[in-house]
Length: 197
Image (cartoon, rainbow, N blue to C red; front, side):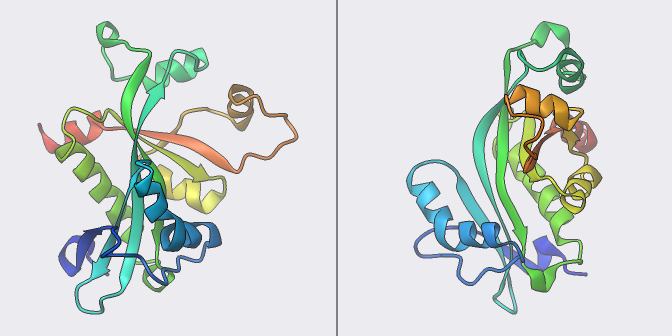
């Protein structure tokens, strides 16, 4: 099994360190990482990183992060309570600091080796350690298909909205419109508690 942090190096995307010929089996993600990510950075919309294999020099996986916020004041009551489950009532805010995992992909060549879960762990690690006390939640708009959703659920993400109906209502979308993504969150307090800090 490939060990991401020991066999690979993390590289921030830049004009000097581009992503070329990345293929994770998803055309939308491939186009973003190969063509659009650098433009997002130029517009201050998020930072993309990738892991390069130290021996093969191939890009193993890539992800982007952007500052965001989780607004709870207009969530349905039960979901607001679930999102704020571990936040003391006296610290109640209308919006909580978060980072959005804008894109995440694992190269097809390295799929089925546990890379995705290692990458999620790494993202949690850097959000907690590099942006200490600035990130209560990790957010993701995950593709609405069983494999992708199960991946995030295995990595302790939860849906912000319990049902697709709730999510459609929140975004004022008709019942007949299929949801392309589901809005998920991870509470970084779990990472802090797990780390014993």
